[in-house]
Image 1: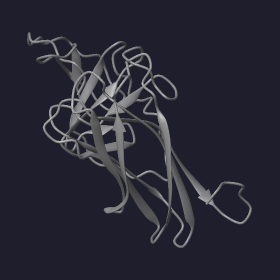
Image 2 (image 1 turned 90 degrees about the horizontal axis):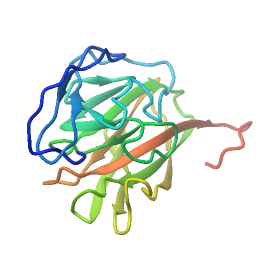
Image 3 (image 1 turned 180 degrees about the vertical axis):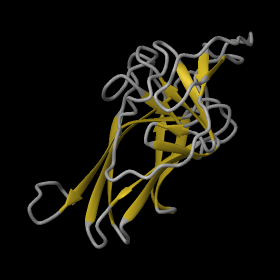
Image 4 (image 1 turned 180 degrees about the horizontal axis):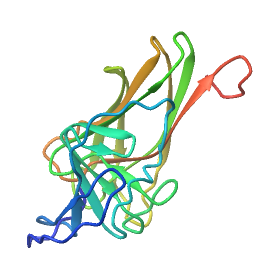
Length: 211
């Protein structure tokens, strides 16, 4: 979660791509909007790894909770904040995701894969530097299995210099669809790890990617 104002303020939310949202501001945080429940969707290819849609308010954010859709992503536990353009530095494009809103959260996307094929996942990692703990932690899962734990130290980081680092791992698809999940393990904090620029690349004999 990003910094909330102490005064609770309800504002009108604009139309989101996934659905109309209700705007909400809460303690120690700037005004943001709240996402709306929707049914989980499957996608034929991995999409929107830079979290560019739906649009969050400029210089603000939208909060999504368990079961709500965020473009091609689904919040599978807790709550996350979709950070709008200008609120802080994005690694790619204009938007990013804080994996801690009011509680630690997780986002997942299911996409088509070829059984037996190897895929490389890359992503940009930072964290919300507005509050503790100093070390934010999380993990990446493939079909429910933990493939990588991650951590990020916010020492010296600011909203204008987030200090993104690139992380990478590979997996072998076991079925025709694969679910990729990013989850925060930073408990008891409203300031979580931040992810952006997620990419999934199929590695084959004709591809030049590093697997």
